[in-house]
Image (tube, rainbow, N blue to C red; front, side, top):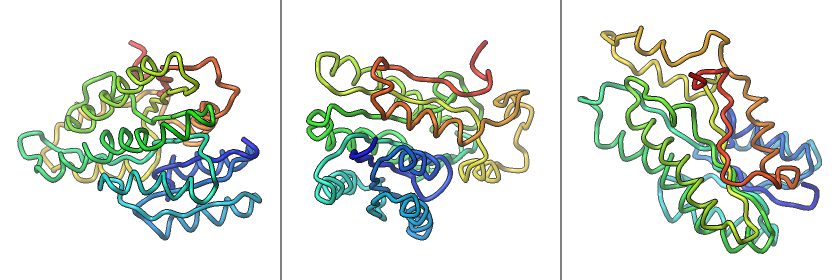
Length: 248
C-alpha cells in the first residue's frame, strides 16, 4: 500500500484501530474516523510512529452528511483514495419487545446506512484508483442470535449489499469484499452488559465457539489484505473468521 491511501471507520479502538495500524504497517497513509476523538488521536500517534501520514476525522457517521464529508476531506488531504474500510459498528442487545426506536435507528444508521453512503461518496475516487471496499459484517449475518435482532439484520444486509455491489461493478476496476468475524474482545462485547437480569443466558451462549474468541489482529490482517492488490482475485467475497461458529 505504499503511496496509497485508506479511509478506515471506527478507528478509535478495537478492530478499526488494528486495521488502520496494519494498513500503515504495509505502507498506506490513513484517514481515520470515529466519534471518539481521544481514541482516534491514540491511533494516529501509532500511525505517525510508523512513518505514515494520518488525517483524523472525528465524525458521527450516523449522520448521513458526515459520510460524504469523511470521503471529501480524505481526498482533499491526500489527493486520492485507494481503499475504504467500513469497520465502525454498534451492537445494542436486548429483548425485541422492549427495543427502543432510538436503538433500532442508531444500529441501522451506523451498521448499514453509513457503509452505503460512504461507498456511494467514494466510488468515483476508488474507480480512478482501481481500489477496494472492505466491509466488516459478522457471523451474525449467517445465523439468528437471540436478543440481537437489529444487529443481525444490519450485518446480514451488509453482507448481501457487498455481493450486490460486487455484481454491479463486475466490469469496472473496483473490488468489493467483506470480512465476517465471530466474537472478539472489543468494546462491542461490552454491550452484553446491557442485557436484563432475566435474560435466557443459555440462548446467548449458543453464539460462541468452543475454540473461544477470535483474535483482533487476525481479522485486521484480513481487512488489510483485502485492501491490497494481493487480493485482486477476491470480489464479492464474505470471508468468515469465526472459529467455526457458522460451519454447521
